[in-house]
Amino acid sequence: EDQVTQSPEALRLQEGESSSLNCSYTVSGLRGLFWYRQDPGKGPEFLFTLYSAGEEKEKERLKATLTKKESFLHITAPKPEDSATYLCAVQATNTDKLIFGTGTRLQVFP
Amino acid sequence: GAVVSQHPSRVICKSGTSVKIECRSLDFQATTMFWYRQFPKQSLMLMATSNEGSKATYEQGVEKDKFLINHASLTLSTLTVTSAHPEDSSFYICSAIPIYEQYFGPGTRLTVT
Image 1 (cartoon, rainbow over the protein chains, first blue to last red):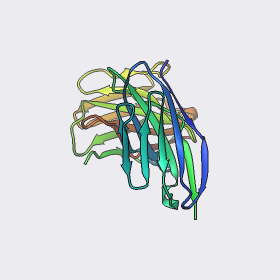
Image 2: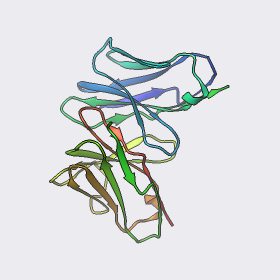
Image 3: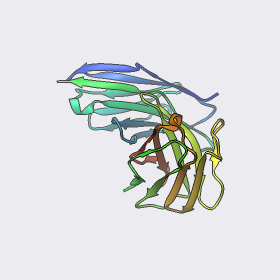
Image 4: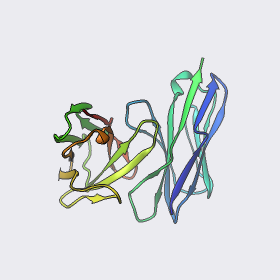
């Protein structure tokens, strides 16, 4: 069964304190792994798509990496405005469906 | 680009009534749209896949007669919650695919009293 597990469930960081969020997955055949950011009461905002092991993508303070079993979202020198829930999702081959993890709630304090 | 809108953003209805939620792709055409449901502090659960010009495909455990989906055009899908009950209260989110990635609407908060 295709499955996505994210850890930690919640993370509290001081402003400037870098850290990583983990997304472990099992899927019959990976078509793509997606990272989204979701603010309270809003829909998810697309961040990255990763397709194959070894791939990395960056956007401002965020960097996403992918291996055959997991993905990491690295946050460098976070700011309070980075506070949100970060969702990971996988897409298996031959489908457009996404399977989401439960997310990591990030709080960054000044 | 890749903007998806939803209407309304919030709706309160009485138990037993029906509520319609619209999902529109504003700057692209979408043959496929998706409807999700999200409970507080939980992740997104796919309810159904909406296909333009054909019947929607529902996930296991989702009542198709309760959650009616109509994909009337390449830019509009609607979700109608029929005979709503308080347990249908939730955050409903749609998404669409302009090229490959799914882009999400802002969500609709449904409260059934």
